[in-house]
Image (tube, rainbow, N blue to C red; front, side, top):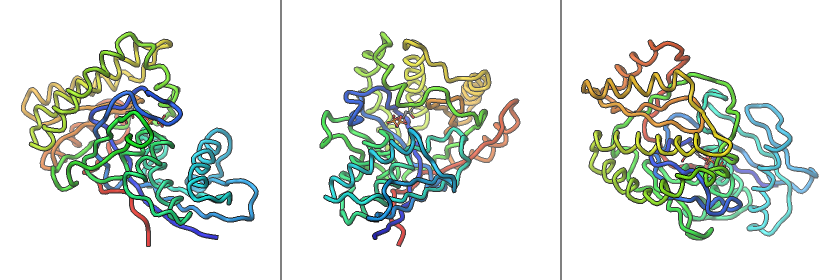
Length: 323
Ligand code: DP6
């Protein structure tokens, strides 16, 4: 019997992953950029044992069966194959952030699971190898393996599709103000959404222009140029949602409050406040600002109608193994 525990944070993408070249290996259609979210964590313990006949999974103390367990078991098969054994696993995972808060927990979940499972299996994987492994569980999880500001190079094969850090967490004091407007589970998950991307007639144009947007965003982060950063992350988020609403069938994740926050963020920025939004596959909205303005931005956001809660996170570190 061998056991290991790992911790990872979710990440917010500034240049989004939407659509795959290879859905099985989760090789994305385009490279993406993100920031890890400090303070929000998934802690996962994996124990490999020859005794139980099937893998077992608990999330926040609740036993999980069905498709979620199958996804984790399929992922563990990759680890077992790498390790050359067929022991079953007991996986126990907890999030310190509210479940159903619209924060993509699959990224931190599969990053922590990759690290814990590979360590428990006695594999000593390099960071790119770990990132590749995490990618096969959930694409965006590969970006939660390295720390700070991260690029996932799309590549075209399993070997060259992984994420790496291009700036340390302390590089830029950005704060992500996560505006929760709905705690309902999203109707269409990311995996199904990626599969619809190419049914939009404008996905090809979005993907073709992605290297240009990524370069502008990377430079804006490296130069701490908030105005350029704001313009490019809003453009990229809007482009992804344009794909979603023009897919067949269409996916419309926004709620009226999502749009209200988008408008107010643009108004505040025009009035001189450094704020910018980005939205993932759900109605909640991430409002980026710098640390000196964060208290004021949060105070303004919580006063808006239908805003349930605002969480904040600064740039976070890499996934790590608990001693
Ligand atoms: C909108 O990584 O959640 O958050 O690989 O199917 O688990 P799966 O997809 P996932 O997709 C993330 C989509 C996104 C944009 C992003 O994080 O880049």
